[in-house]
Length: 531
Image (spheres, rainbow, N blue to C red):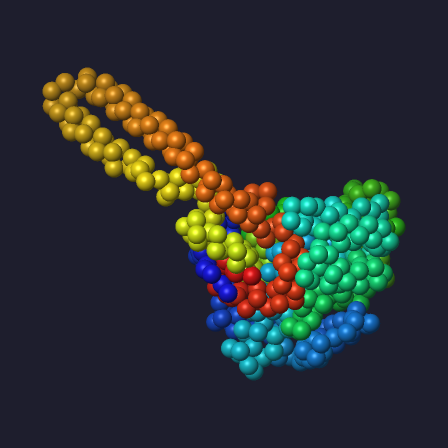
């Protein structure tokens, strides 16, 4: 069950931009279509219906069918694929890299947020249908970001000398990772099931994209999630004209300036800087940036060169070779999908806000941007220990130094808070200064120095008493810190480090249901869940 929810600014792990965005701060009005609420999502349906090319639906459904060949679909998935042909069907989309074994827990939360929002919208607007989509970032080429996962403090890493887009990586060398991981989980109730899933997905697939599709499908097929890999000729053919427009006009670089200027005025850090050309070229197992040099276009390593006519011909014949970067991918996605909302993490919210003016220039509907759910998962025994130690859920999020001080004050039988004494001292010196003003003003400097000396003395005494009391209660404090370290591995939020297998090994597939039942996508608070 969900234990509690806390505000994002109390978690001490999120940017000012994300905190302000979740509070629906009005200064974002120039950077978004609207904030994600039920009413605004309903309005977004109307906007998208007038701005989407419904002729794309048939191509979309045909390609999804091709990609799911050989994979068992649930009934709700079959229904959702067919519904995509209908004009009254819209998508809720999230995207993510192809992290090994899904990577950190927040990947699970992103997809659950997407599914839950689709279900919520169907309940509230039954005349429409909503399909949850996972858009695979199969064209990324930063292998080091996705080739590992963490399990109870141990890191499992897949080494490979392959280059190019990671979705096309072959899986011949991954068996060593599976064998090593098996030693860690085989003794748990669902440990062998995890290994069976792992082997089925990664040892019986042609490439990383196929393996990731199988894994995500095993976890989420029953909820109707549809997975799309846009790295193919059929889908990129729908997008040819915008690829050529980017090459001709550098429209992302030029048109994002308005939104970026506004973000700078608001003193938020940019998540991604647009390049003059926001495209890569996939060739000879490499993904190279396209740059313009003189009167020619070329890949960054110089292996491929074109004039304007030649590169446009290449786009027409081989659109699959042109790969959008992080700022062009949202435009690709929103162009081909009947999408009304994108569900992303804090970094994604930040870079989407750079693009509002780009969408306006294209007369393309900018989706509502929803920050994914965030959560902390606790086992019952951890909750019982924290209760026994008289520690609240909110306290566990405090910085370690502040948590220790709070615990010392809480466990001590002495009154260790000198705030009142400091205030009394301030009041007394204020009286003395008032008298000095009416007698000899030269005393003011001496009084200020004496006041600061006595305040410093109180602070020093307070610090020494805290240290003394900490030694007395060190055993209880250590027990709290031990739990905190498990919940914040390496000092970072659990969701950014721990893999879902840490909980699946004990709870099995029910863990997904437990999390799903306790996350409310439009309730923008951080959830603490008993798993």
